[in-house]
Amino acid sequence: MARNGARGKGDRFSEELLESENDRLIHGMAGKVSSLKHIALDLRTEAKDQVNMIDDSGGAFVMASAMLSNSFKRVKVMRMTRVQNCKSTCYFALGVIVLVFVAYLLMDKVISR
Image 1 (spheres, rainbow, N blue to C red):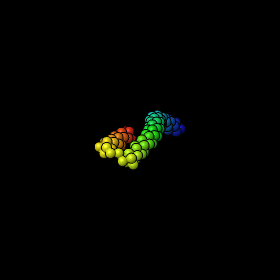
Image 2: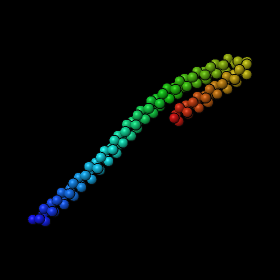
Image 3: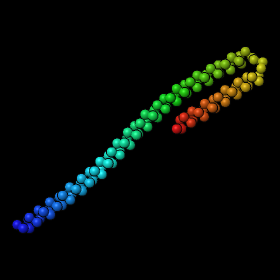
Image 4: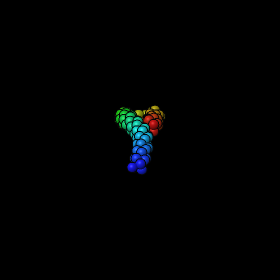
């Protein structure tokens, strides 16, 4: 009988030891779950921000396309009327090319963020 009593205390001690180990592991796991939750929320916020940025850049591309379309229409009208001043036509074409290049650089910076 004495042995059974001693054995019961040892079993109770190992159960308490296992229980405290489980509690420690549960607290560690709770911290990791909390960290994962914060990471998931940050990812969600970042994804929403990037979707908004893509939508905004799409509007900028539409605006740039409309501006280019109007510029090419003007060039076509100038060519049709056979403007005698070739120098101004070349400057205008060069200006359009420079504007397109600047718009491209700006869009590249916006998209690369």
